[in-house]
Image (cartoon, rainbow, N blue to C red; front, side, top):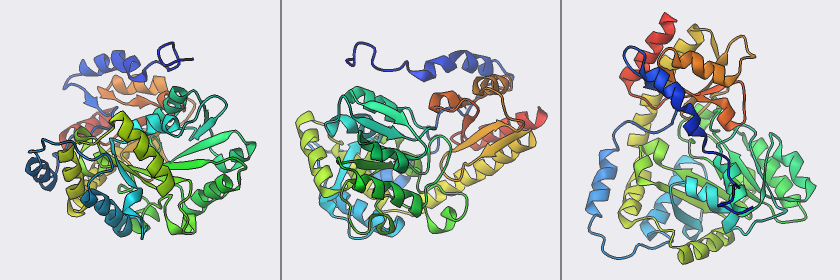
Amino acid sequence: MGLLTGALPDFPWDTLTPFAERARAYPGGIVDLSVGTPVDPTPEVVREALASAADSPGYPTTHGTPALRQAVVDWFARRRGVRGLDPAAVLPTVGSKELVAFLPSLLGLGAGDVVLHPSAAYPTYDVGARLAGATPEPTDDPAARIPGGDVRLVWLNSPGNPDGSVLGVEQLRAVVDAARASARPVVVASDECYAELAWDEPWASSGVPSILDPRVTGGDLTGLLAVYSLSKQSNLAGYRAAFVAGDPVLVARLLEVRKHAGMIVPGPVQAATTAALSDDEHVAAQRAVYGRRRRVLRGAFESAGYAVDRSHAGLYLWVRPEAGGQDSWATVADLAGLGILVAPGAFYGDGEHVRVALTASDERIAEAAARLSGA
């Protein structure tokens, strides 16, 4: 079924409109915790880099500047425990969503090919498979599903959106081992864009492991891709600054197609990305801001009779009524009655939880907490 003939599901966010209207009618207005869009200022070091590169009359390079690719390599070594990455195996992307949506197509997948993704997942994994004509399939145990023979791409998401779950080294390695044992080539792509926002131990101290971690790969990156976005760690959602890195052969294939298609990150954004990846101070400061908001919101929800499940890392709380059993849309309605808008777990394949974003100002987070306490 083609792209323009009904292959894609309806865009889910439109169904939140009546709940948003109800929340806006609450005295004091809406507290919108439904979408994880950053609200804090873009760091000065990044804005300065963007402005300095504003005189950019020529075409940028699809592969990214050498400085950008080296900044990615250095960041992986410094922040993710991945050393010796080849700068040629790094490719900037126009945000991470477009890479997620088009990776199955860029890899040449089609009818008869299965794309695995987490059961509770960002909807674009499903959409990307459909765009390629492949079959999306949710699973919580990809290592067990891979031997079926029809799997060609596995999406991992750690830390997870929406539920904040984290995959440890052993879990990642099990998927990689299963992919490499398959009779047909299987690509394992890991969406890691919340990796700098770990809250619970051991991840807060030791870091969230990457699919490119040598403890996972055994030093062999064949068939492996890590996807990362600076939208979360650096408040750069408006810049569309992201990259993919890993298997040099796969990255070269992606680069060749993207050259033909003109899928290029603007030169000033490449400069801004380089600056952001080279400065850890602003990331630590933003993490502290989200940590404070998370403590306030989590305490308020738990005091109001809600349970917060998983939520070990990332920008969201994965919330349900403590008693359990209530449909996620009913919880959305309950919270909209307090002027608080959240996203139903039904958007992500879970009918019981709601996703609560930490991306609101301190004032609005405090307002949400006060309303929950009053309830």
